[in-house]
Length: 401
Image 1: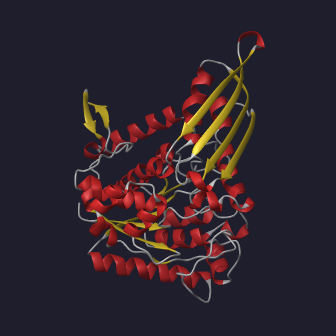
Image 2: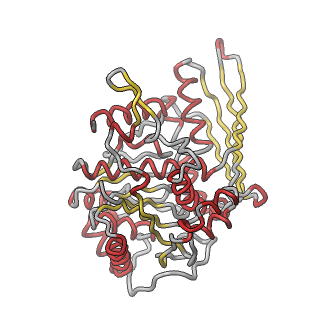
Image 3: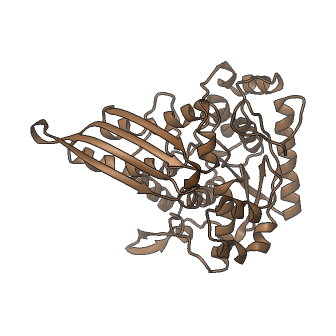
């Protein structure tokens, strides 16, 4: 298969967990628990590993690269993030230290809680995209790589809606050259990757690839794309519990969700503009599963002592036979980066295979990994039930075989 370059804008807690975790798995001192591609499915009456069935790259093939607003190695970042135990990080110190960040495309207007010192300069956003493409070419030459995938792990940007600048590729490129505020940093990375034919996945709720301009570009360059927002903690629980309530015909009257977390993601989401982007993504789930919209409230609270160990509380008010009220309480004490890391690896491996198979445009079969899955039609309702998503994903893997 050769090497696979995994390029990641945003090399924070999730990315350092991916890097350290991958090297630890290679050394057989940890297991890829939580990874779909390293699980088994039934095919021809036997249980087989997904990665073998679909003929995916091995984790040994991956070469990491990426961008961040700080000049830092993934060894240093992992120690700073405090997601993983120090002993595990030290066991792959040499490997993780070799993965260093490149200067990022960054603009404080889109992530107001952060300041960037390790950033690119350019006369306009189109030139910044060209600088990213140059980084990619240099990365490929340095590591003797032909095949790459880009995964956005950067922070949640402020809430944005589609404008005429997103309606087609010509308008988008013109807006980049005019430094339009409609073009965010995540869009610049996406444009650079897709222009080069590199598959792109959006792990944040940003308006990045789910727009006509990016879909058009992905079709023209025969590039698979997908987004958005990793389905990890509280929303994961919703897509598991809500389908059960639906098939049992128990009416959901209200669903109140609140989170506490203290990592950089929580700090960024303390800004109302970034929280709005996340809120829209999280609120999109229940309606398509239940067939109606209950009262649904979501809150995220920045609480530094908790670090990356997020806690999600859910109160669900339901009605049963004759309209009698009942309640369900969920308290999910989860590790955000631990849940997200295998999704990054799975999506990267599957997108690389999709590119090899000649797939292009939006890959709806990858919806399993995302809170707000991208669709191919503007008015199309995405599938949110994790069980339906899983069935679609497994069938696609079998089709690949």
